[in-house]
Length: 125
Image (cartoon, rainbow, N blue to C red; front, side, top):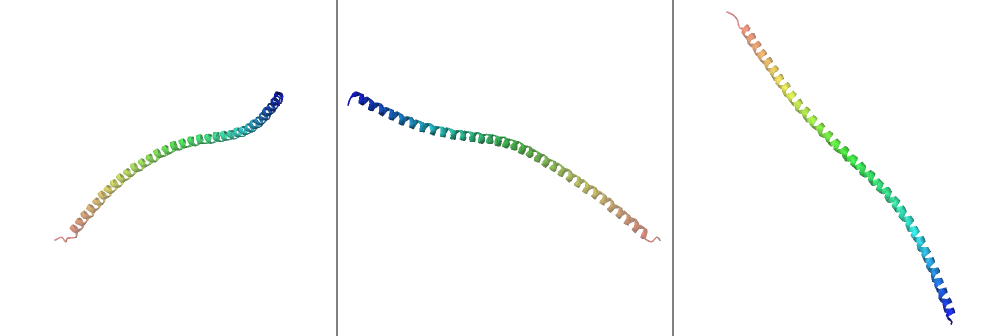
């Protein structure tokens, strides 16, 4: 074999190798494009999930504010109920005392009336 034939054989080998490599690179490029497309889908989904999480965080924050406000309102209502209960208790005690005073007056009046009635019922001599 001459050098020219060897050079032609080597040249063809390189060309075949180059063609196979180009075919392999083309397949790798197609696969990379598929992976890139999939990653773009994943990125888009991740952005939607992240936006949803931000919305949820905002909602949780607002809910906590509302719960704190409701807690304060419930405390105020409870304090108001306690205050009105104390006022009602004082009013009941005052009413009981007044009723006792009125009842005492009626008892004294009845007792005084009985004494007058008993004093009149005695025969005079």
